Amino acid sequence: MASMPIPVRLFHITAIQNLAAIFEQGALLCKARSQAAGINYQNIAHAGAQGVRASKAVIDPPGGCIHDYVPFYFAPRSPMLMAIHGGKVAGCNYRQEDIVYFELLVRTVVDERQEFVFYDRNATKDYSQAYTDPHQLKHVVDWDLLTEEPRLDGFCKYFQDRHEPAKYLDRMEKRQAEFLVKDQVPLAWFTRMGVINDEKAAAVREVMARFGVDLPLVVMTDWYFLNQ
Image (cartoon, rainbow, N blue to C red; front, side, top):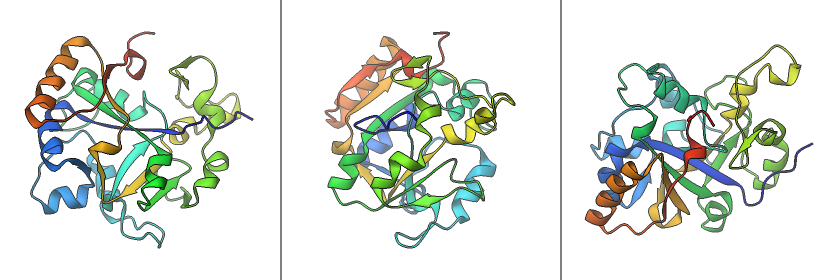
């Protein structure tokens, strides 16, 4: 059984075009809060899944629905990023080079006493299980699948479902295990941001400078699909 990486890192992706709105708020806002504030982030998500997330209740406490939380995955190179890059998200004209990562540590959320909930797989699934005790993370998330060889930045290169061996039957859902943070995540909590290349780093730095945002920004090719 693979052991849980320490620290546990979390990854949120959004369009670079959304950064000005995010920086203006000084935080990543949950979908419900950004909509209430009249902020129209550029969409990079499946409409069907968003409908589920708008209505699916989260265990109480902490309560609310999924859209009351900022979502994170436990690994980069997600099936969602692959769908975006492959042009498979209706209404989304971005490709992976247009996407920026925010990296957060679980312990920061816990230390800041922000409410959160996490799931053993994609939170939209009817049979996904929700938890609020951080000590359960080591048992709930399938770290075997997430961290097995071959790895890029500590995480398995692959996530596709396969019939053999049986552990790969629902690998994609498990790769999309989620950690949801209630309401918002202040920019100061993030460890760093990541982009695909130097050109995108320059574009992001320009927006950061405009809003006085001081976060480490790195080119992380291992977080993207580049034939590694």
